[in-house]
Image (cartoon, rainbow, N blue to C red; front, side, top):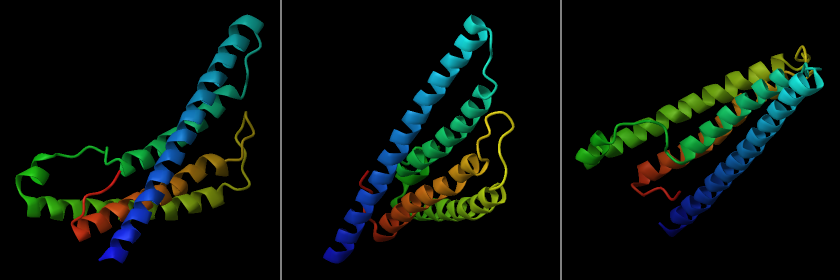
Length: 167
């Protein structure tokens, strides 16, 4: 039993590290998006020479922020759910926790699989204005899948062992 708890404690630290990494990267990207937007406004209205690449860069930054936020939401169990079935009957709550974690694992596997295919298919392409390699925006999908898979796997193991998740 002690080895299983050590494994779950280590797994919990890994998931919390992934969560912190995703949030820090999302915050940095959000700051970059705000700075690019301010530059875009300045160049458009003050210099009267609009930046051709700013809209694309912000769009692709928003994609990354969204997928990084999905990792953090999975780690923190912040996705929408009804609490009444969990609280009203412990056995039903246990079954729902297992089912929810299993469904998240399946979704994460699809994100990794299809996202990797999409990123690889876009290897030779560049965006029209910013000339960003299109594999970069697509890479957010499988990366989020890996983060969600780690978090959902932890949730599944905790539900299976009937242990409270440490967040």
